[in-house]
Amino acid sequence: MINPFENNKNDRFDSLEVFYSNTCVCSSLHSSGPAMRDHYLFHYIHNGKGIFKVNGINYTLTEGYGFIIIPGELAYYQADECDPWNYSWVAFHGTYAESCIDKIGFSSQLPVFKINEEYKSSFESILSDLITLDHSNKLYLNLKKTGYLCELLSIIALCGPLYEFNGDKKETKTAKKNYTSNIDNHINQAVDYIYKNYTRQITIKDIAEYVHIDKHYLSEIFRKKVGKSPHNVLESLRIRIACELLKSSTLSVGDVSRSVGYSDQLQFSRIFKKIIKMNPTEFRSNFKLL
Image (tube, rainbow, N blue to C red):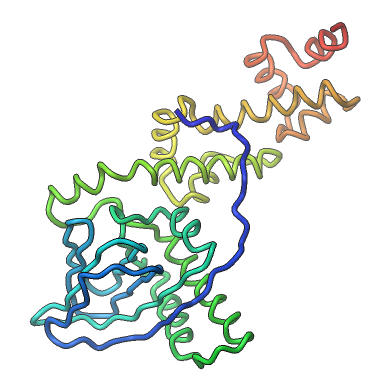
C-alpha cells in the first residue's frame, strides 16, 4: 500500500533536449522497424492511417492520434496500403525525459495518445514551428527547441495516454492489466499537489484536474492503493501539520487553522477532534504538561 506521507521529493529539471524532428508524407505500406531506440520518440498523425505495434499489441491509428516509443522497446509501424498516413515526429532525450514521460503516464503498455480537438490547432502549429527551425547547434535555437518540446509535451500531458483503445478487446484487457505503475503515478502526482497546496482552499476536483483524470476515478484508486480517499489524505496532512504548529509555536488556534487551509476555525476544531480525539486547545495543554 502506498504511504502518502513519505518524503515527497520533486524531480529537478536537469535536461530535456530535442534530438531530431521531421515530417513525412508516407507511401503505401511504408514501414519502420521492428527496432529499438536509445531515446524517446513520438509521432503525430496529420491524416491517413497506419498501424503501430509494440509489446505484442497492434494499434490502428488515424488523424489526431499519436504514439510514444520508449527507449529499449521493440517497435514497428507501417502506413496503410490504401490510405497511408502523413505524420510528424520528434525525438528527444535528457535526464528529465524519463521522469517526464513516466509522470504523464506513458509506457510500452500505454503508448497511444489523442490530441483533443480544442488543442489540435495549437499542437500542430507548435509542431510545425519546431520542425521548421534551423537545425544548427546554436544555444538560442536549442533553447527554443526545448521550449517548443515542453509546450508539445504539456498538451500531450493534458490529453493523456489512452487507457482504453477501440481495438481488439483482448488487446485492451492486456493493456489495462499492466497500468499499475501509471495508477501509482497518478497517486504520486495527487499527493504532490496536496503537499504543495494544503494551505489553500483546494477540492478533490482541483486535485483531479491537476492529475488530468476524473475525480471519481481518483477517489477510487486512492481507496484501493492508499486505503484513504484524497480528502482524508488532505485532512490528515493538515491536522498533522497543525499538531506541529500547536506544539512548536504560540500561534492562536485560529491562526493555526488558517495556516493549514481552514478558514473556518469551528470546522478545523471539529476535524481536529475527529482525528486526534481532543480539540486543539486540549492538545496544546496536554503537550505542555509532558
